[in-house]
Structures are given as C-alpha cells and as structure tokens.
Image (cartoon, rainbow, N blue to C red; front, top):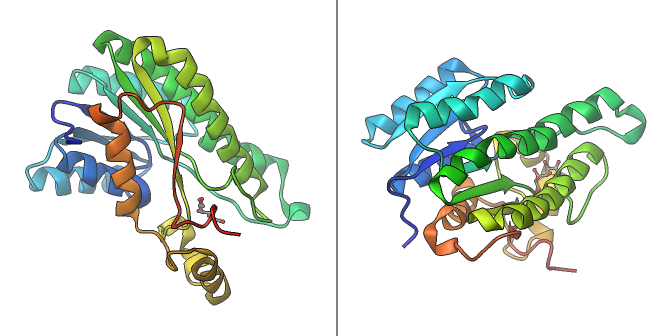
Length: 251
Ligand code: GCO
C-alpha cells in the first residue's frame, strides 16, 4: 500500500524542511520527485542525494516571487519527466511582528507565496493531470487558519485561504478524478521555526499545549503526504489532515 511507482511529483520548497522530508518519503515510495527551491546549489545537492541512493529525482531552481517562471516550471516538469501526477504546494513563508509593525507590503509578500502561488500552480497543473485522467494536489496548510496566535496575521490568513482554496478546487476538479487536500502541520521543528524552537518559553508552551508533549518531526508530516498522494486515498478530497500531536483538539 501507499506506493507511488511511476508517479511524478512536483514539490515546491523541497530543498529543506517539510518539503525535503516529503521528497525523501515520496521518492522512497517509488515516485520521481522534482525538487524545487530558490538555490540552484541546494536543488542540485538534494537531487544528487536522492539519485545517489538510486531514487528518481530531478530539479529546477526558481523564485516563486516570479509567478510566470513558477508557472513555466510546471510545464517544464511535465515536458522533462513526461507526466505530472502529484503537485505538492508546500513552499511557504512566515513573518512575525506586532500588528502596529506589520507592513501591508509584508502582508502582500506572505499572501503571494502562501496563497497566490498555490492557486496559480494548481491551475497550471490541472491540464497535465486531466491528460492522465487523475491527479493529486496536496497543499501544505497549517493549524493556523483553524486557530490563530498573535503576531502572524498574514500567515494565519494565508493558511486559512489555503484551507478554503483546497475545498474550492476539490469540488471543481473531482469530475476529473483530481483530488485536492491539505495537510495541517502543528508545531514541527523546521528551519522556519528555529526562532521558536530556540525560545525556551515558546518551546515550553508547545510542549505543554500538545497532548503528545513534543514538537512534530518533518517525517511525520511527510507520511501524511504519502498517504494523500497514494491511490489508496482516491476517495479523500477537500479535506485537511491535521498532524499536530493533538494540539487543536485539547482545551
Ligand atoms: C508560528 C509558527 C507556526 C507553525 C505552523 C503551525 O509562528 O506560530 O511558524 O505557524 O509554523 O505553521 O501549523
């Protein structure tokens, strides 16, 4: 079960953090994974790491701020890998500041990467998936959007938008047998969260507010992505699979 042999998976933001964990896991399940990120060197190193283990991988560097290039990248994957079965809209950024210091330009930057890009790449991927008669779109959402905390208004709003977009695309693309789902990570020890992990008070808050009493591991989020990408998840669509150690369940 949960094999991905013969599938091509494009994973945005996959040179590190959750995206890299997803790439490793999905390549390990037989997929050809396409690594993307801003650093040409990092993309090359990650592809070499996977192919060195006998796994199928290729890569393309690019900055999602350049939407036209990002959209072109979707076509590049289908052209070079021969097909596109799975799109994981994982790339995301966070920005943290008290509201009075939170500029509209920063708001727009976060919303662009975390939401505009998800819409644009999903739209670009659909024709390639329709040609195959099926597809998987998986969005890295968050527990934010379900819940919120101070100082991250753009992140919370963008991830709430991802939740809504996931539902909108799920109902529109179901006739094409393209499922659209989201993964809602809780607090995972990734590079984006390093400032939080290294803050003793925040670390203690996460551990005390999480029934399982610890931060999540990237591999635990990757396992959810493998499931949602698999044939076995063919009847799951429009959902957000929250992987948070029970945090949003507990009072
Ligand atoms: C923060 C964190 C969170 C986590 C995660 C929770 O500033 O509170 O960055 O947003 O990264 O997204 O799901």
